[in-house]
Image (tube, rainbow, N blue to C red; front, side, top):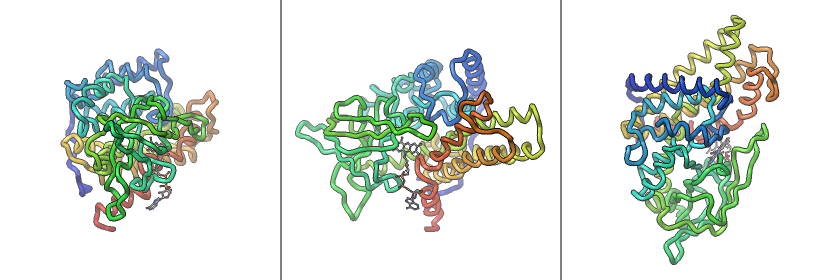
Length: 386
Ligand SMILES: Cc1cc2nc3c(=O)[nH]c(=O)nc-3n(C[C@H](O)[C@H](O)[C@H](O)COP(=O)(O)OP(=O)(O)OC[C@H]3O[C@@H](n4cnc5c(N)ncnc54)[C@H](O)[C@@H]3O)c2cc1C
């Protein structure tokens, strides 16, 4: 793992700029055809399997993975350009987002050959979706305290009991990479005895109960496991190494452009408004937001390049997520101060709609994927300050 906050600059990539142009053309055509409408925070809430399959057909999922697993052996910079354009357009990418971003890489790193061959090509085709089964009703920040238990039965399968919560899109997904306690807690090593299981969400004994967010949307859930029998060969990686594996996954989870672009469609709408009626105070706001955005982008690109080199830059990733998600919320406040628009989900004005959506999703930005307090603790420890 990288204990440093200093990362090499991301290489300039002609190939990335070429695929960026292709994606822009595709998105413009899809928008013109009415295949989707732009929304804020679509990587959480824009579930559209047909759109995910279109991306799969174009080779824009599993982009960096080996061809033998359905991937395309393209660079992290090319993948970055694709994800950045999809987020900037507010396209409906939530169905495949977790699988493409972190579950696939976790399978590549820790999965058995059989797991990789059976699952990765389906993810790359935009047909198989994953969720993150980490948080529990009494374990969020303190993830090591989880109580969902998995016990081997005489047939060598795992019997799982417990509950996960805030499980984004479990109702629209196929598998949950589920963190479980696979041997009793050891007070001398809280991180020991945890494992990850690939749980098929259609198994008997799994109840998926909706939890609605402020705008009434159903994106996350409580997932309850009652004597769920998970086949023995669905252990991911090494029994007891769940903590280490989860930490590796979080570097992918925390550093991408979605950690500062969730409210970008609002910024874009604001910029369009300014073209029509420029106002000095509003232009200054746009300048300030753009400067922060560009700095964040450079940081995030460097992490993408480090992940591509096989490093695990977990500390810089925590920093980007802290600063990036703070930016996502600040965007709403800054724009609200300089425009005379009443946020409303039902307004015919796209700026009013984007403001309402961004505001109603805002409580989640700094919580999901680890709260800012926790991330600052990770950064402080990385700098030797704690
Ligand atoms: C939109 C959204 C989507 C999510 N999707 C998923 C998902 O798909 N899968 C999943 O597993 N989880 C998901 N989560 C859960 C998320 O990871 C947790 O909410 C988060 O880790 C915080 O845990 P908690 O809610 O239990 O809060 P707590 O851990 O109870 O924290 C409450 C408050 O106390 C502070 N705090 C806690 N411990 C410390 C400390 N040591 N030092 C300083 N401050 C501290 C926190 O910063 C926070 O402000 C999602 C959450 C949201 C909002």
